[in-house]
Each structure stands twice: as C-alpha cells, then as structure tokens.
Image (cartoon, rainbow, N blue to C red):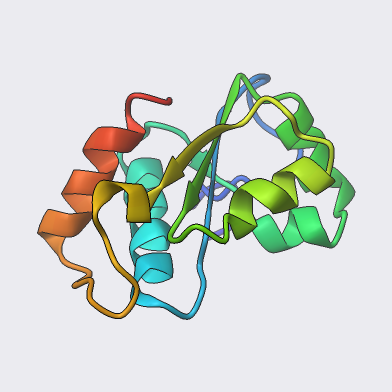
Length: 128
C-alpha cells in the first residue's frame, strides 16, 4: 500500500487544499497520544496526517502539500511545542495548534487508550 493510499499525506499528489494534521511523535506518552490521535483522525477521514520529519528535512512534496492545505492542525504533546515550532520555521504560519498538556494530559502520567485518544479527537475536530 502506498503512502497516499494509506491516508498519509507524504507527497504532493491528490486533492488540492487538504486538511493536514501534523503530530508530535516524541518519546513521551503524550507524544504517542498526539500521534495516535492524528492517525485515527486520518483513518476517520477528518484530515490527512503528514510527515513532520519531512517538513524538517525540507522534502519538497511535503512542503508543497502543506503550503496548499485548506487547514493545518499541529498536535503537540507538551509545552515544548516542537510540532508548531517546526511548522513555523518552515514558513507555515496559518497553523491551528492543540497542546495536549493544556487538556490535562501529563508527561509520564498519561495512558494512551481508546478513551484518551477519543478525548483528543473531540478537541482536534474543532480545528479541522
């Protein structure tokens, strides 16, 4: 299955103006929660998860897809805001931002479960 078939927005093909989701995929539990919520939003058709490392690496297809996005959602696990800052450095200024620690999720104390993923998704839908 190709990246586009799986719903991962890792190339410049497809519909113009997608809703793109970038997530922290850091080593903490809140990073895992951000990542799993973004993947579920993609599976549910709410938007297309794209590769944040591709933005950092200046992969042209990923950057161009992001520049053409109808909307961009950055989901960060903690106040370091790595996802939002990475997008800003790449020149993507119109970014909706969701920080999981603002929702009460704490590093080292968060269970990544269907319930916690659903909670993040309900908040994320406001921005998509």
